[in-house]
View 1: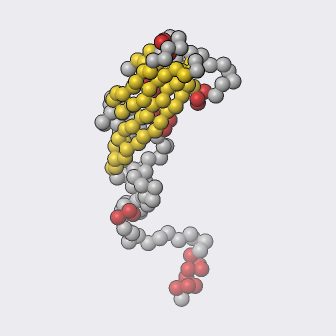
View 2 (view 1 turned 180 degrees about the horizontal axis):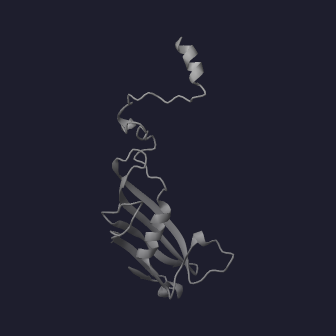
View 3 (view 1 turned 60 degrees about the vertical axis):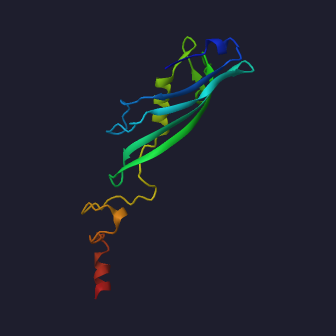
Length: 165
């Protein structure tokens, strides 16, 4: 989807409403494709005091696999983007606050694709308290303790023999 900012850069008072669902079937996270239901983008672009703003909310369902316990999970994510739209940047400007457009047009699909990549955490967990799996038997520790004996540091083995006696 292309957004045209020509009128807004000419200081027109129109508001460009944005309400769409973007399909990112090719979006890959780790080794899987987690965005099955599309990405909902809602917001507006407008000009105020000769500055062009882009205020949007991005919402999507993430179908993932936990990096600790390898269980599948589903989570809804949402984040806001409040940016100033410009045609070019000076070298000392903070790029995080701006969206640079070519020929007064923004490819919304590419922009949102990049923002989702930046938003997602590097480690995906089913729960912040996820205990993972036992490295010996492979049991999911979220479902309960396993029967594996804890490894003992060989330097402490002599002390443990004293406690057993």
